[in-house]
Amino acid sequence: MRRAVCPGSFDPVTNGHIDIFRRAADLFDEVVVAVGVNKSKTTSSGRFFTPEERMAMLDDAVAPWDNVRVQGFSGLVTDFCLEIGAQAIVKGLRGATDYDYELQMAQMNSHLTEVETVFLMTDPSMSFVSSSLVKEVAAFGGDVAEFVPPQVLSALTERIAERARGE
Ligand code: PNS
Image (tube, rainbow, N blue to C red; front, top):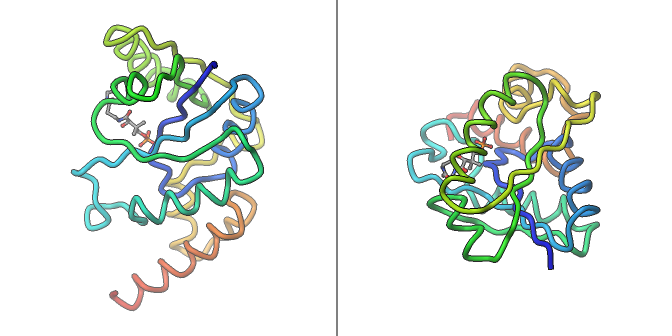
């Protein structure tokens, strides 16, 4: 069984992420989308969505693929890979900035364990899409409908309205 982990914070998941999950699901027997639950990054310090909300949106997003599931993790991604028996980490690369950052993480991770990192080149139509930019554009009233699934768009719209009301 070849198992891969797609780690990230997914705050929120974008169509760029989903394209990577779909392609990873073609390459591996099982793909685990691993949602990082970093205690220093709570909703009060910048996160839009709680881990539970992010995981629920991911569950919807990966529903079309039987061999993709969603799981939360805390601590090192390499420890999570060992725990679930994953041989690889799969990440999308949008460009040189991603590459510089991801190369360092991939090398650290392979130093920590024998896990391989597999990079998939982001679809060019999504190379400028990130969770951060989607949130920023949406917060200022821009249209992000083509970058996220409909349920994420609804959740974003609702969260922005809640924040505007000071909730
Ligand atoms: O979507 P993000 O914010 O780039 O995801 C970051 C994430 C969760 C994948 C990364 O922070 C991570 O792997 N955190 C776990 C801690 C860890 O293993 N750190 C060492 C990486 S070399």
